[in-house]
Image (cartoon, rainbow, N blue to C red; front, side, top):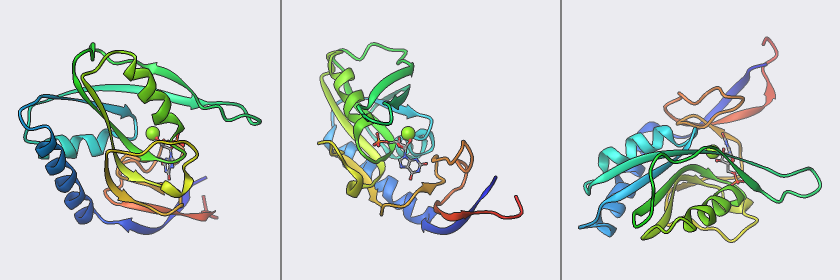
Length: 180
Ligand code: XMP
Ligand code: MG
C-alpha cells in the first residue's frame, strides 16, 4: 500500500548548496591527494553522484552493499556484506559516503571492517544525520544536514524500495493512503 508524502523537509536547491559546501570542505581537506569514495548502496547513489561532481581533487569511486541485522531481543548490529568493494583500499584515502546515519550501528561496523584493510585514512561523509537516534559512538566527519527523528524518503532514500527518485528530501505521512 502506498504512503503519502506529507511535506518537503529539504528542497532540491538547499540540497544542491549542501553538496557544494561538503564537496568544498572535502576538496580543501584533501588538497594534493587522491580520494577513494566508497558509496554505500543503495541509498547513497544520488548524493554520491552529486557530491563527486563538485569535488576538485582526483577521485576514484567504488561501491559496497551491506545489510545490518540482529534479532529482536539483541540488536547487535552485525553487518553483512552483500556486495564487496571491487578494489583493494590499502594505502588509499577513503571516504565512506552514506545516505543517512540513524543509530550509527551500520557505519560503525562498516568502518571497523574497512579499517582492517589498511587504508591510509578513513572518514565518513553522510548526506543526512539523525543524531537524536544514535546508540553508538559514531560521528560523521562530513555531514550535509541534521534532520529530525522522522522517516524521510527521496534523494536516494526509500520506503519499501520506492521514492528514491524524488528530488527533494521528504517526510512520509504516518497514515497509509486509503485508496491504495
Ligand atoms: P543505522 O541505524 O545503522 O541505519 O545508522 C542507517 C540506515 O538506516 C536506514 N534509515 C533510513 N532510511 N529513511 C530511509 O529511507 C530514513 O529516515 C532512515 N533512517 C535510517 C538507511 O538505510 C541507513 O543507511
Ligand atoms: Mg542505507
